[in-house]
Length: 496
Image (cartoon, rainbow, N blue to C red; front, side, top):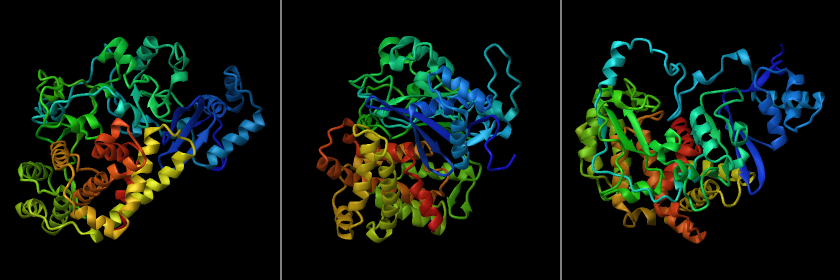
């Protein structure tokens, strides 16, 4: 077969995410190409044709299957449509090997190969048995007070359900999107168009379809907290195995998280009866800290060294300006590695210079402005993700003015306690360790804090009264991770 010829039995590729959105009463399906970053908007009829291409049907079979769903089309037209998708790199054949096993499982989704209920698991290897005995180390002095306004249910691009969770949701609320017995009316596959371990619920104006108008979860209201998918029940808790313990921290991506900081009496991040990793639900995704994480461009450190240094940093006295401290720490780590001297630079940093921060803000503006233009083509005006992207683009554009940025950096930090908690949660959960070297991740987090300081002026000017605006740090964090804006930092890393 020519590489330009679509597969005989095509399916949507595993690097393509199909997400159903209802904007007002209009249904749109957006294809997100993870490789190119491109978006393609489909109408409801086109999506029926694409979803019928599940790798088991030829073109004639796709036409017949789509016709049963009321999407009538002629074979030549479907062949031309599939050829366009294939030319864009969105299709694959069933036997390409690009399947869900290539991808890391999302939180709350079983990994490939998990035995079915009642099937004995193979004997665990020695290192796996040791890992199951690692203690659970929960972020101290924190409990969560959820305000029930559904901010976190209105901002993420994907809310995952496993098959049992999706069936339960449709049984509890069969009226939602007329799902009832028809799974495909409320859900799309997590990836591609073939059956997989997880499905993604449709969004209505950027909100989970099961979110009630007043911000309450309909599944929780009817069936209690256990009726929600595991990812929702565990949010905003994060789990990282650092070789010594499983660090349990919190993602600072919801206004409720920051509003809970320093406020006792809330819900614990974890059932206190759970003591070791083996006590956790096996479906929970526990990330693993690399054996030799990157600490600076071209430089790594032993995992145990980073863990010990991170503990010392978390115990250090944070400076009045956490962003300035993070920038100073980044330079020190690049110059001398994971030393006590680097921590001392963090505790007593010099002023954060606009010339040093400016390129980071410019790169974030470029990414946010592009996303804002894309969102305007298909997201509704009430969509929180669309508005938040616009706010971030506006804030970073304003900070491109050197005098304005200098004035912001010289002004008193508006929420120092919030910034200190943000850093404490990140350090405890090893959330600064990832694809970027640590030194660049530190600068990235400093840039995020500065953008969050500028955001209230932008949202006030826009007349925004959304509860998510109450904690701008959380809004920036959710948008950068949940909508790919954090790729700006990867661009910065490549430019260095």
